[in-house]
Length: 394
Image 1 (cartoon, rainbow, N blue to C red):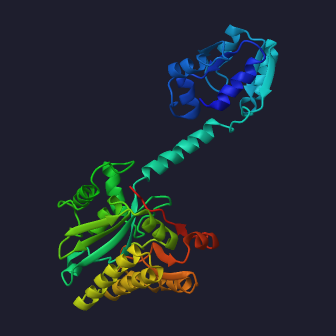
Image 2 (cartoon, rainbow, N blue to C red; image 1 turned 90 degrees about the horizontal axis):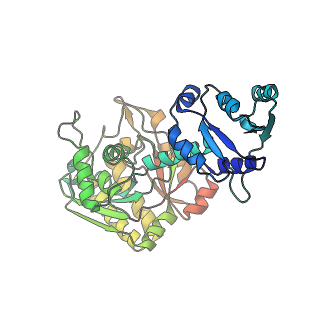
Image 3 (tube, rainbow, N blue to C red; image 1 turned 90 degrees about the vertical axis):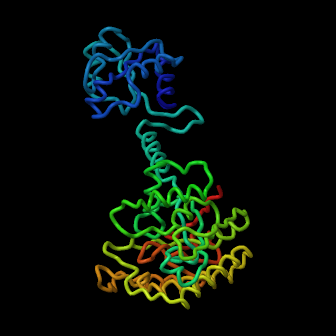
């Protein structure tokens, strides 16, 4: 029941004592092919409690015109329906019984928003969908791949992530830790629990990397940490799956700096059969370049130095693709696939003056381009496909 029903009762009551016929659960199920949200006894109680209603009953008939027994028992002078519920069959029914037939327009009460059951159900569905998507996601900024021991064995270093509010559709296979989010939703479907973020991240990491899983790949800890630890976070890896230390900040000016200069461009998802590790070339020098870029990137962010941020962000990505060229030119089922290359997208967006740096989130191969820009709000207005980012503060 919503304000539109109440206003309908108010208008109908202007014609005399108002008796309301309510569809039974059986009729609703037959007509709608689903059960009503509230059972008939509860609906009867609610309608009887409305001050404009003299009395109410559950209609004993069936089908669209289930109220004939009620009509014959009450013997009203007037039958009032709204225009959406009106029909020639109801009009004819009233003519046969000498009852005046009135159709009321669906007009909201003065100052209130128009309501309908269908629109409210749509809003509830959307809200439910948003709740189910309420688990944060993460964007890696620098140092990606260092969370794998086969990389950090050559040189220890930091990975940098931000935890993002899911204010946009977080698509599968797009480098934003969707597999980890789905694991989280198996335990907490709506939202993360209130507990120590690092302990929560460790729980998620252990749950996702169940030792009895059928595949041997271990998801990097940056996924669970990036999702569970709010704000800006960096985690230090040294030849282990779990970092030796984790540091984070929720400083508001730092959060605003990042939001002002980061946005994402949606691309096609990573293709089935895609491998970004084939053709990898990991050397101590390349890993050291990655770790240095990540540390410099952290300092640039903390100092809110846009030029340094863009430079180190780009340096980190360059170090990544030096080790994993398939991040940009993925291998599909063992074969380099030019059609899947991300290079044309990079070429398109990198030549725009407002774009200062770019990278592929996660393992790459598709999904998004994460850009450093001069002003994200202005950039997203000029380029509607771009996505503004909102960092989770707590």
